[in-house]
Image (cartoon, rainbow, N blue to C red; front, side, top):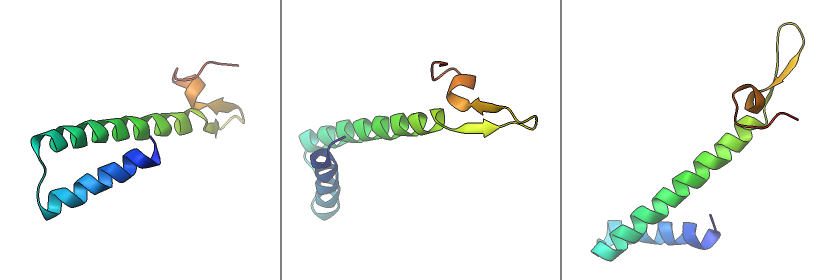
Length: 73
């Protein structure tokens, strides 16, 4: 998500509190929020896929590989 889109989300939020939004602006705000949430979820999944856990027996297991979100190398 670009900085411009995040700025637009914030601008619409401020306008919503101050004076309200038109129906078109409400639709734009909803679409931008959905895009933002998808971006956050994707970033979180990528971070979790790169976590390595050390098991009690000393083996290292990559969570992304263990749970099928990342291809095994």
